[in-house]
Amino acid sequence: MRKPEEELTPVQIVKELDTYIIGQEKAKKSVAIALRNRYRRKKLPEDLRDEVAPKNIVMIGPTGVGKTEIARRLSNISGAPFIKVEATKYTEIGYVGRDVESMIRDLTNIAVNDVKKELSEEVEALAKERAEGDLLDILLPPISFPRNKSAAAAHESQDKGVGTAGASSEERGTRTRERFREKLKNGELEDKLVEIEVKQPKTQVLGMFAGTGLEDMDSNLSNMFSNIFPEKKKRKKVSIKEARKILEEEEKDKLIDMDKVVKIATERVEQSGIVFLDEIDKVAGKGNSHGPDVSREGVQRDILPIVEGSTVTTKYGAVRTHHILFIAAGAFHMSKPSDLIPELQGRFPIRVELKSLTTEDLEKILTQPKNALVKQYCALLATEGVTLDFKPDAIKEIAKIATFVNSQTENIGARRLYTIMELLLEDVSFSAPELSGQTIPVTVDYVRTRLKEILENKDLSRYIL
Image (cartoon, rainbow, N blue to C red):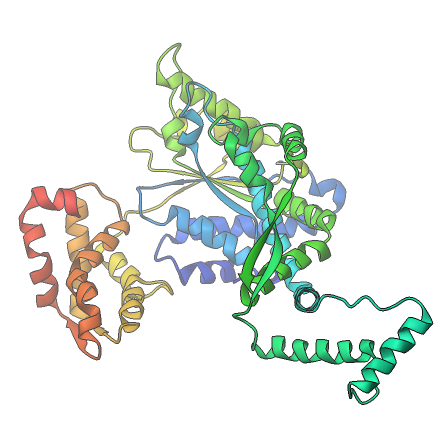
């Protein structure tokens, strides 16, 4: 839930994060301060404002402890443009990989879409009104009235002779249009088929170049291809219900000022954007003259100017990265933050270590967050009329089993709960339609019985859990 920046005190930010993330107070505190510093920076005199750089953060901790969730929720709270990228994607193709500037281009696209969505809500009422007018024009094509007076008089006399109570053709057309307008508003014509012109997005035409490396091509080249393949329209028969949606979207596009959208979106990216660089540990390592380390250090050096502050060309114009907040994360099992090149280390001054989750943490994760797994499964099966009754001891047992399996196999943190819960409720989920109206008690014995075979057979648990 987005709140005004002045309300986002560090205490308030942590409180909001607590509703979704269990534990990791140190990490929450760090990101809360980083977000609040942005508000403080905006209050500074202009000459000092540009000198204050964001304090980028490195989160260190095993998978499944909440690194990504903290960054994502931080973005949701503040309404800031957010993107998550894997650092390893830039090493996939030879020594170069994907263009690192693509992360800023993608972030700008996200911001533009968000702003466009916000502004579309402002013009929604007018767009609906215009779309309704377009539908009436399709249902009742405008009548071409006679130009000369004698012909008009003849038409009028004919109208009177037919018994229209002296109404002219124009008046009758207006009344008919109003009747149809009323029917449209009442939903009486929703299933009627009409023929409309539908735009074919340019992306469909440019899609033929997918996989050729042109998805990250220079914006000028992209615009050139867009001009070569201009927007096309095709006629399509659809129901009035579907036609209304299509026409409303087209009217919104006409009403929204794209220059304003781009200006707001660019400012948001530059002043409030958040880039989450996951798996940064996978590109850590001292470079050698040959081998994979060449690629790793090369990626670090490519990322460095983006984090330091540079200007990236996007299809919406130049975007400066000087005040974008970068949050890097990695397990650092095989490497350590000091293995990053010194220049990059200096750009991530705040290092936060996230703790491995305990049994108590997993127990809280199952029940306390707004999106807790127990709440999710109860809600899902309630749609079939089945009530799940989780006993407190059963939840503790699930947490214990998750901790045990994590200790015996790969420790994947809270993600282990997903596989355990899915296996635990597999039979109930499968038979739910036949169990409608029943209450299923989930007890300690139920949990142990359902997971007994997996726990006893360690080889099996390695693959299933």
